[in-house]
Image (cartoon, rainbow, N blue to C red; front, top):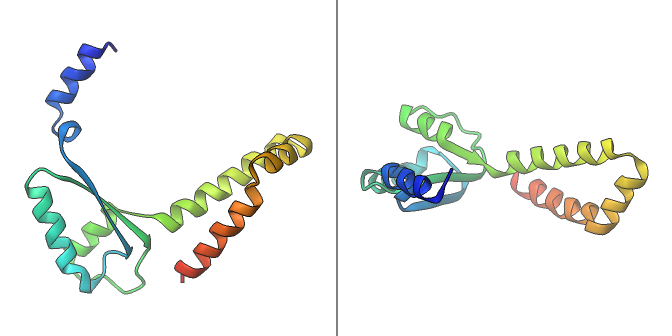
Length: 125
């Protein structure tokens, strides 16, 4: 695809040229977060694209349909990172012993994984 085509597509795609923001909270949605939902809806009504991120999922039941809709739109970072770490480990395992050890030494993956594991233990409760 040439540059002129890419520019033309961006100009005709409202989301490509829209202002994009992220909403990051520890838990979302929650019953007590209706004010956040209203703020997000107000931004979106003005054409702003809002990505929703939560560290973890709330454990309380969602009784409001709007909260259930927000849950479907929200990415939970702890779950995504756990998946990424497990995938990385399986990929390293499939490399074989010597290649795996070399990669681990070069990138110190074990130390970084230990730090992330500590973060998840603290936030995923």
